[in-house]
Image (cartoon, rainbow, N blue to C red):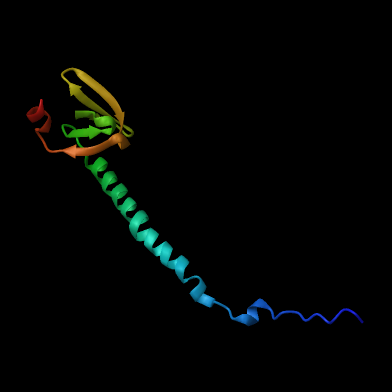
Length: 109
């Protein structure tokens, strides 16, 4: 015979399984990802929701795009802001970003 016998290599499992050590880098990356990205974002979202829920008529706020005004009316989804005398603008509640201290608008105008 001209062909020699071929021997099969040992199965991969018999060469040594990595076990949990193979997953350890993935677990570490997930933990870092959670503490550096997911958790702070959830905290900011919770603070924003609490601020929007605590908003009252007469509060001075900054909406998205830098729109500054005094809250005139609050409904379920919208807030009416008085941006100038006799000028009222309707914005969505989630666009309100900052609750200003009382008197901020008069001090800066």
